Amino acid sequence: MLDFRMETFLKVCEYMNFTHAAQALSLTQPAVSQHIKFLEEKYNAPLFIRDKKKLILTPAGEILRTALETMRNDENTLKKRITESMHAKKILTFGVTMTIGEYTLVPALAEFIKAHPDTDFQIRYGNTQTLLSCLCEGTIDFAVVEGFFKADNYNTRIYRTEEYIAVASSSHEFKNPVKTLRDLTSERLLIREHGSGTLAIFTRTLALKNMSVHDFSSIVEVGNIHTIVSLLCQDCGISFLYKSAVEQEIKNGTLTQIPLSDFMVMHDFTFLWNKDSIFSEEYDIILKELLSYEHP
Image (cartoon, rainbow, N blue to C red; front, side):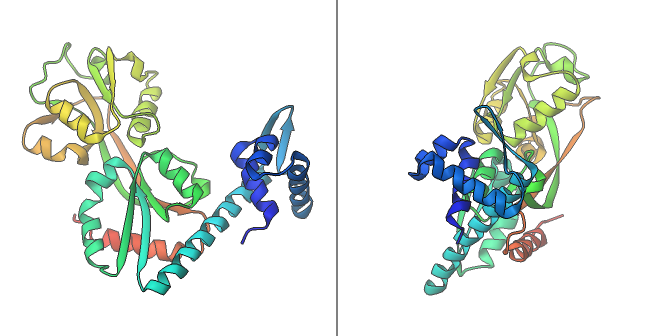
């Protein structure tokens, strides 16, 4: 169990404001300040830089926050495991991003579920940022994501490296001859919502070419991969997706990959959990089993 002053520290990290943290904890602001001062003296290091009304975590504060979040989440998992032991059934809760959960992971996950009849599964879907928040809050055990994240906060393993492609309806008539990425800017672009790993890959690739999504003639933002694929099949625009999300449509000729001379992107799907968790060995075993079900 975390010391109450450590709980105060995590609440301050959440709000980055002593007053708001005090209100959330039903404490006075001086009490919150005393708790932080105690920890700074205990660890002989400043935890926050106080710049007028703005708080900034110091490097020592970042280390402490990461460690305490892991301890808190491990404690929550321990409570869950103890409850499970009384019912002779294990519950595995994890998160997956849309592309991974709806396409890439399904075959291996099906084999994994069948191999563990004594386990209940709670599978959470969300974009990369949502799942990272769930890990931080301790509401999931681990996640498989495709977006960018601060690796220092997690134990990470590569689950798969996936091709990321430009795609359109096979019957699509392009407004201009297409050879490069910039040739597509006259087209309507279908994209995922902010926070999506799929969108993050695309925007970062564009930035490297001094471009942005706003260079395209019009944009349709969609929070669901299946809807984007369906709209592509109805020739409502072009998109950039992981190949696994449109592999079947490309095979049956409904969609086609747009060949571009200056666009070749491969990106890792990452299996991750909170850094230095006491359950790290267990999560590694789960990953190895999932990978054993992957078909070449």
